[in-house]
Image (cartoon, rainbow, N blue to C red; front, side, top):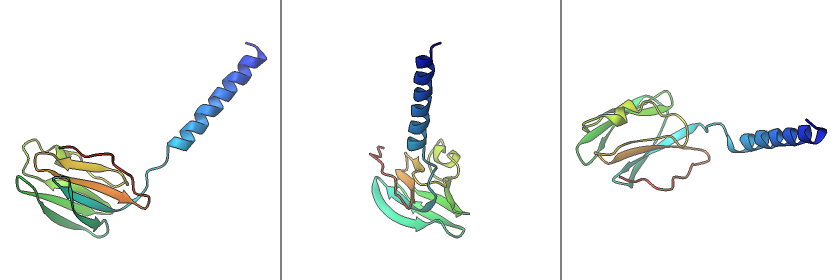
Length: 120
């Protein structure tokens, strides 16, 4: 291996490291979340406190739980309960949806993440 090879490998490694540091940002802390029903905004809620929220969707009510700065679906009238099994959401940009009931939640941080589209 020549000296030029070593320099080229070093520059490539530095470029990879710089690219990784630039694009891999830590997850932003969420401060609130938005509920959408059939793609339309239904409300925004703060992630402080511990409480349950009932959201009326196409098939019936979906129940959301806010606890310790995070949120999740705890009950929904859908058949497979994929939304319930998606678990806790706590970082800005996280999202979960009950597609059959047409209810979705998206967490928002200080620097709000943009979503291209939500499709049901």
